[in-house]
Image (cartoon, rainbow over all chains, first blue to last red; front, top):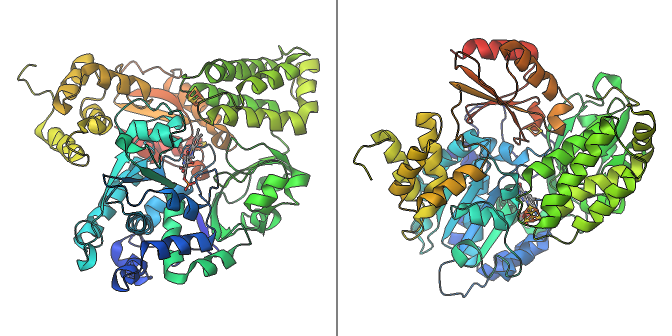
Length: 429
Length: 162
Ligand SMILES: Cc1cc2nc3c(=O)[nH]c(=O)nc-3n(C[C@H](O)[C@H](O)[C@H](O)COP(=O)(O)O)c2cc1C
Ligand code: SF4
Ligand code: FES
């Protein structure tokens, strides 16, 4: 289910109309007007990047890096080939917004990428799509055909000298490929193993060429910013947290789904939009930004607004905007066991602290959950975590540790109960 | 390389379309798509098939093996006519992911990783598929996502898979 409240990605989309994703419908609701405006008014690259900076749009892929700033890092005068890459490898547990964009409004992404190519002097782009959502890959290929046929994409776009080629590429089951350098390796036809940084993709990216990578929702926000102006986008949200955002709400709510709302919306209002808690149960905890984000207990969460700064202040992160809601019946040890299994399973194995450490985290949480925990296990978890965090090539290591730290910070008593009594306080799932 | 074509002309044409997306000196980029196309036709990737695809893409066989073994959705062992992958990651688990997996185990009489005696179904457990709002979700033969897989919905789905 998708609920459009106010925003820029799904504005005007009719979710009940199976043809609403198509080019005709997109153009009718103002689509490709931003691209036309750029071409007709000969808007310069600098002006576009200035508009992106004014919008204060922050990357929607998880790290929240300012997009305008990222675009300004691209060496525009670099003489050789450069690449633009979209990250639709959405696999962070809890996140399902990019799938919705691909299925319901793929042209917003395509237009955003064309504008990005124009602004950074890039002529070739790829969209890397999560393998499990193959239908989204097929839809994207269809939308590309439409855009090419209409002259929005390809050679001499809208009669200008600007050329931009765009292609779809799919993954085939590896969470790590969401990490941008693993994604580039995968796009090159290799195992998805993250690269050492630096060099950063802006200087050494796809095929060793300067490359800019952004998330699907980031690109899909660009047409609005160019059409309506960065200032207007900024004002949709709150200072330093410009615009609106898609929140993927899953778990124990009555209406799970994607909600496009202004940044800064109180969490309590978001919960209400989702129809409240399922079966009238009590809210216990929320993971506010995808499985890597530290969990927050209900009382803290109910005080938060949904934006980067508020969630960070509460000790977690907004991440990809995946809000996992858990009611009083959830056993936190069991929940953590499942997440720790995931990170252990998906570690690419390149660095020892991550490969060995994620295995330790999983095995220790597993034995606590299964009544074999020892009193020293909780300190062991924290010390194993300390040996992973900050010592790895990519951020998957940190991503595996943060859920453990969050759980032990807020729900330590539940873990101690398991160790002492060898049983759960609550039934679990 | 033998002259025998292991894949149909349609599959080869699809691989050609993948190859056309990348620079001429970067044919290797097409290997993920090419292996997917080969697997879709033959159901699983034998060594012979991987070598054939590598040859077609003009990369060393070892480079293709590396890819086939790294990514979870490639099957290097035989699977049933329908491979059912149930997501049990936390968001799905909160909405019945484990119940869906247990129901399938009991109904098909097999465990995760096994195939029914008649070769019809293989059961797998998967990680987050990026569709948690429709939990619990199940993927049929890698490419068809099925939403809200309650026991009743599973019964209906299984009956459709002939
Ligand atoms: C383990 C891991 C998984 C990631 N998964 C994704 C993902 O699925 N989608 C995404 O856009 N970014 C993901 N990222 C973040 C990317 O590396 C990158 O920061 C992002 O695509 C940049 O786009 P943005 O600036 O528009 O957010 C992941 C990072 C890590 C470390
Ligand atoms: S941190 Fe983990 S996933 Fe990232 S490169 Fe190292 S081993 Fe691979
Ligand atoms: S957790 Fe099952 S699709 Fe995300």
